[in-house]
Structures are given as C-alpha cells and as structure tokens.
Length: 303
Image 1 (tube, rainbow, N blue to C red):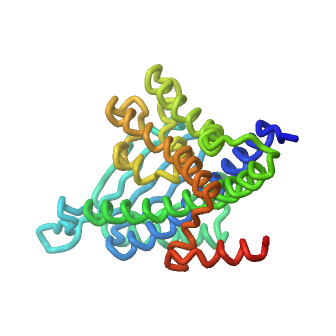
Image 2 (cartoon, rainbow, N blue to C red):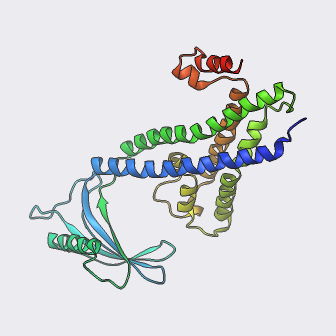
C-alpha cells in the first residue's frame, strides 16, 4: 500500500511556514533588542520627542533636540553653549509631516519635556488624547550600522534555517523508511515542493510590493513589507534605504534584488530533505566530528 503524499506534503508545508513565522518573531525581537543596545552604546542622547495621537489618525510631535553637525558633534553658539531647538510637526495618517514651528530655546525646555514625560509615564497627568515619547539620538555611524546588519543577518539566517532544517530532515528520514518498506514512491524533490508551498505567503507579499510600486496603491506600505520579511531584514535594508517611506521610491534594481531571498526557504527545505533522505546529519558532522556516532547508535537501536 502506498501513502498519498499530497495531504502530508501540504501539512508539512504549513508546519514549515508556521515555524518560519516563529523564526521571524524571534528575529524581530532579537533585532530590536540588539539594535537598542548598539544605539545606546555608539550614539548620544541629544533630545526628546513627544507625540499626541488624535482621533483622525494624525499626530502632533513636539521635539526638543540639540543641533549637531555632519560629524555628530554639538554645534555651539557664540557664548560656547550648545544650541537647543524646539520644533513642532503635524504628522498625517499617511506618514507625511509638516513643520509648524521652530525656535531656539534654552535647556530648561528639554528639562520641562522630560518632567512631563515622567508624569505621563507615571499616570500623574490626565491628557484627553494618548501620548507617547521617544529619545532622539545622534545618527549611528554608517560603518557600525553596516557591521551590525551583517552580523544580525547571519544570526537571523541561522534561526531561519534551523527550524525548516529540523522538520525537513526528519521528513526525509521517515520517507526513506517508507520507501524501503515499499509503502511510498520515491520522490527526492518533495522537499522542494514543501519549500515552495511554504513560501507562498512571502511570494504574495513580494507580488503585492510590486503591484503597489507599479500602481501607487498603499504607497506607504514599505514598513509592513519590512515587518513581513523580518527574517531578511538586513538584506531588505541594504537595497531599500532606512529612511525610505514610499514604495514607489524603490528602484527597479532594488525591487529585483528583493526576489532572490524568497528562494532561500525552498532551497533549505530541498537540501534538508535530501540530507535526511540520505541520512547525512549535519549535527553529527559538527558535534560529533563526522564520526556518525548519532546515526550509528540509532541504527543499532533499530536492529
């Protein structure tokens, strides 16, 4: 009797997709946490921004920050004091912002904003609208940012690969047993099929990105695409500038460069399935120094 692989293939693909989502969530929080650490270590706190959210979706941002030059150094006035600017912006629901007001103020303004922020955090004030705040830092050195992106992408790739590898290796190993028992027809490309099915949501996101870029529909959805592809966040950031808010601002070359990462999951699933089918364990080769101790022990237990 042969087992029909279609239903099990689909189930395995869904399992791989869910594991990829889990890996993406882990990557997101890992990226955010490590980036905050890097930002605090390699940048200076130069101000504070407070946001007031209104029912129509717009925000009023009040910012107080010290002026810095292109090298990240404070700009001083004629008396040798650091220059502190107060600015007010209106941020529309689509992300566009308009500067309403700016002036040079003294350090007491920043101290007052910090006190208001502490009061809002403790619930000591009763604003009718939701408020939030964030610190303003000097720009992160491009070299440090690029180094961070490279290392965080390596870490993310390990997480992204580890989950489907374990699932597909076990699937290939089990299928080998079924084939040897004449209960399943051999299909060494099953891992590729599973990987392609698991990549359908990511491919749909990419297709939506191309559609929005061509039509201008939901032109501010670049942040959503970054979030949906967080497992390849550093690759996306390499081709799409951090400060780019418009999908139509993505160049044709950058849009084309975002496609190859979609092939990683199918390739990993295909290779992992073949390794499992041929009972080649990377764990044995890494942990047990290519002795095959793990598989030999398992084969002894089976015999």
